[in-house]
Length: 191
Length: 227
Image 1 (cartoon, each protein chain N blue to C red):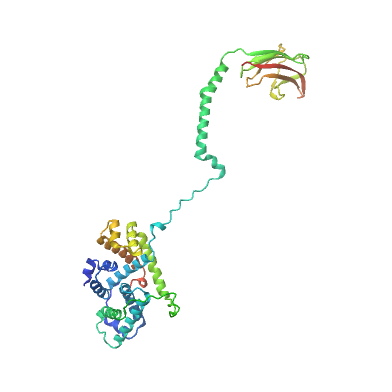
Image 2: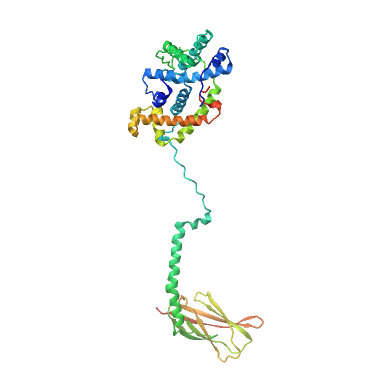
């Protein structure tokens, strides 16, 4: 895993609209915002809307010279995202498929690079899952796939919530280790 | 919130398990937006959970039963070597061999080595108008035929053939009579097979030096089996 800090050089390249830097910025913060927004928004479209609005506001602030501390870049993006969320977050309307008056929506464009990344990640995850002990697999399946109550699952299998965190920690570490053995292009949101 | 505290308190796992209160969650998000290590940590966990939600872990109800290995089928002609067949066959053969060695052969040996009185009868060839003698023998025991052959003749050897009551040839015996012999009766031992009672026919042929065969004569006798 690469460690990095956003520095003045990085910020300058962003101001100069350097393509590679902008791509990195977009990918990096898209991933972070997705994780954050998944707790608050149900639909992928809503999450995407918030992400896009956050980037629009960020680049506007960058052009206006409001962003001066490169080390606070992450905090700044997070703040904008929180603001967008507060302004736009409201109960999502349920769209009936039988509603003839519903507007016809264009299909989402296919992002091939995303599909490839997803497949690579899925393959790695599968390898990790197959190496897990049977009990661990059952716990993870019951909680995340069956969406069962965590306390109930822990009680049933005779483990504590601390054990549950440790179990998830071990699985995650194995995944990170396996993933980082790959080439740089496949590293998790690295700089 | 610093990185050490995040790691020590397993904040990433708490976050992914949705165990954090809203304020703590906001604080942790503020942290990982600025900490590449924690960001990667959260992303790894999130990817893992996403795949599990997509069904990456199969439930016990849909697990595929292991397929038993396929055993090569032996050729059909080797089917009789199957243990289910060959073991009882071998056991039966052993029992038969054991019975023969322990019972049958000793009894036969005793019979051969013991003196015994055999049934017998004199036979004359070409005795027209006679039904021949009657021989009473024990079941399975041999008996003797004293066959009178015409003296002289250009024969270097003879054959005697015995036909059973059904007219089938039972055995054929080649023999020679030395020229110096003064006896005109030939003793023939008829083996004691499980012979059936009835009228038997004996045919004697002479073989010349050139190999030509010629009937000398025949006769018959009545065999009775003692019960």
